[in-house]
Image (cartoon, rainbow, N blue to C red; front, side, top):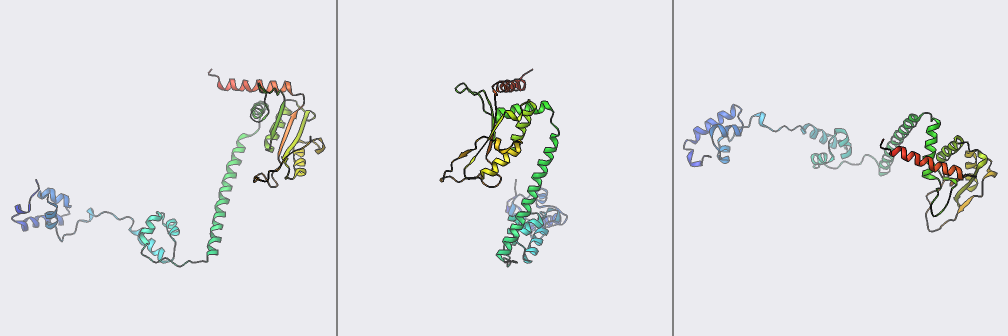
Length: 285
């Protein structure tokens, strides 16, 4: 049970013991347990004037960082610069240096914006370089395609992007429309694998009327490997003045539609191939 103040008849003798223990390196809790003094106020009086031993002091690992932060602030560094230099949080920097005056700007607002823009440009360039490196590495992983790989790829590609027969609209024909030249090139390679020559293809451009139609026609004709005059009549999309178009610029070339003449039998085979892929992929065997 904790002692009451009245029970310490020989307070000075008890204090002598407490001081001796304190100087021997005892913590306040150890002195309490040794002398069985559980009254906090009396315990404090017993060791009054005696500093605690070093081992009981809470370490202050951030003292050096704090001093360095203050030095940098006095040299005119910003919070962000100090944070980056010391690797600590911005809130800690603010707490450590908030009593110091705000340094005068080292450069004009225009120079600050220029530095910021230059930094953003460097960051964007690094990110773009990383993106390109990832894409190039992924492209190298593909290597050469076997005929079977191209065959399966083409079936899936057509079933995703090509026209399909519907119970309410019989369309047993092969027609593929896309704006991605890569998709068009793969589709053409697939048709060639199937023995479908260019003479069986009917190609036409579909594009917004305000675009460079002439350039688009030349582009798609060159990609397919046919004369521009062999293209069907270009379909022009009317301009709606209430909408803001995003598909503009020199890279916008509309879409190319490719239709295989006399393609009913080929369509039926494509549909069969696709369901064969589905069955193989979902088989539980």
